[in-house]
Image (cartoon, rainbow, N blue to C red):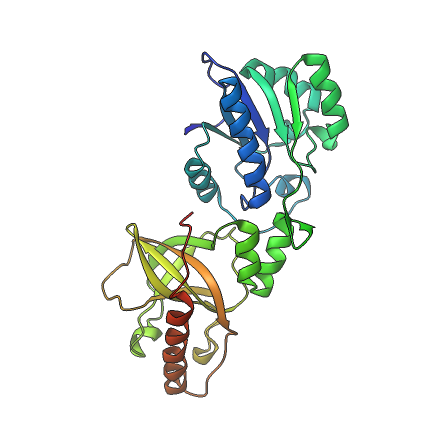
Length: 311
């Protein structure tokens, strides 16, 4: 996959089928759109090109943005796994926000040899979201490019959206999250030193430094898989404040079942399959130790028949 940071895109022998969006989560609705993008590009002998943003536009437009389901790095890796040809990640600036739909198409997309534009059902382009689906249809006729809208993907008879997934994450409803993402939720980060309380209990944990803009599930204990140096390992994650030890800082700790070794400074990814329980405060560490043993047994049982899509 070719990576670009701004227009103009380089010229090549074929055209481009382009889609534009935030694509936070790259959920099953986005996947439906991207499948259409790839099909049209293949049919036309063109490049499948995704235009997205390095930060959520709401940060500039409204002064605050939601926490993200996928960071820019995660988004890039997932798109690459989907065999997208090109990814253009733009900085969402005040200058960019001030460009209207027609100017953006005429000044940036058409010079990039766009032959078709494919968008989702809620898409609008340009200043003040003035480039509605109806307006884009007229512009497509005026400037002679193909224009296609891809409908929502549905789950439980309702449209899948990043907002709906965020709400499920806030509840810790991981089956719903997995169903709408089309894969397990994951978070990645470098392993950093923590308080090492788990080691003292006989269950050493990797304290994961996750990007501050990443949305984490509700506090609690979760079963899933850790990916370390390409190896998939059963694991349990604790997300929260470690109330037994009086911590005031939220942490993301991963215990890799049956693993021992120094992994400080290494990148680790945690794929979450199931929520085991709420975060609890225990009267003494011994009671916590017993509870962790039960958590590990519950995790082994739940993970026994689960397969993971490592995206």
